[in-house]
Amino acid sequence: MANLTEFFTELNTDAKLLETYKKDPEGAMKNYGLSENEIKAVLSGDAKAVSALAGDIEMKAFLLISNHTK
Image (tube, rainbow, N blue to C red):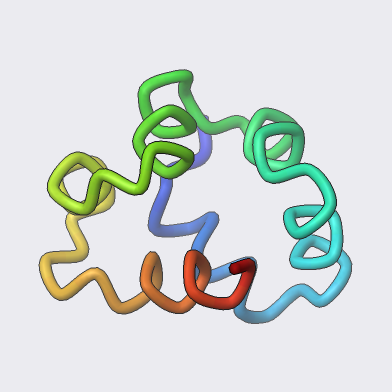
């Protein structure tokens, strides 16, 4: 199973994945293999939940992704 940190890293390096994510975030995360808990945390914008699941205390990857799509 993929993990959230790998997904964020991949979004930063794979333009096709990023375009898919912009169009359908939930679908892109499901196709990547993220768990329902990870998907819900990202979609909710709950920084504490995402940080706990990703292990990214500073939330650098999540902030980049969430701010990019707004």
